[in-house]
Length: 406
Image (cartoon, rainbow, N blue to C red; front, side, top):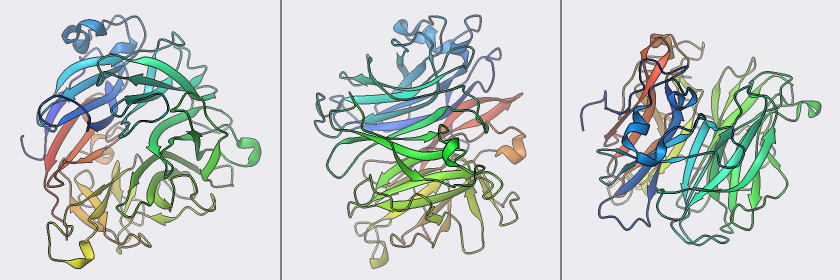
């Protein structure tokens, strides 16, 4: 793999509309029967939204020929993310609108509901051409991501417009709770009458995602302006869960926060936003967050007893100063902590992937999102993101490197 500029996973054609490609996600398959370390990746694929636009993905995957609606491409690696190949596509077989925004992948680590261990779930936002509705739909693959079938709808909302007065739903994220039941977290704009512009909530399923329990609020700001969103969840070695999310609005300006839960369902008072992901100097990650736990620097890799449980590492679109300006190293810096109690001791860490952030590129589509995946042995960290090509159009790049923890 090349240096911190990384490699290109997908480059959109020059004719691609909008952002070209963004919002990548990546998942390791622990139950795949292929030799090597198998990963799947996906992203928002804007060429598929325009039937007149050349689609290089469709040319390489026979069953991914566009059907006049957007879809989520699936790329596959069998060498731990060193190289990737087009593999399959998740298509909207339920609404006929297309799968347009915010894909996520999740391999079930054990049998859940009707699914065997190794079943891969995908979710994303099904949205018609006129953007009049939003639906977070779930699909399942029982053959390692080769084919997909519709399972259920987690949440339905209004127009796909992120502003006050609208009622869309956004940005699904999966986890298994402490009882090993499926949970889907998401951003929700349907509760303005309760004083919330947008909030982070979740719904739980006790039958593997076929049906869903009532929504529970996890992070809210009851001022009708600030917008918690983009939830991501990881689990600590002690069994607790960590939720990271952004808060966008006049009060927080895109700050990233973390909360913990003993079971993946109870995150405490929803109005308690937890701890900001920021350094002692006030440098804070902002917008499009991602979080993971890694054993790097843990008891197997270092003599330091403070790192017996590894580290929590967070990424985001930008790193900003306490004055909300671009901080040095933005676009090439992660924040990491070994403080699993208060999460108030974050240090700068060199990221595997270095890219021009939105300040330098002049486009907000850059770095949306920046998923992180530790290697199976914990020795390296894989990072993906959307990087600027031209005219607001982005490609998906990736890089892997050891973490140099302080």
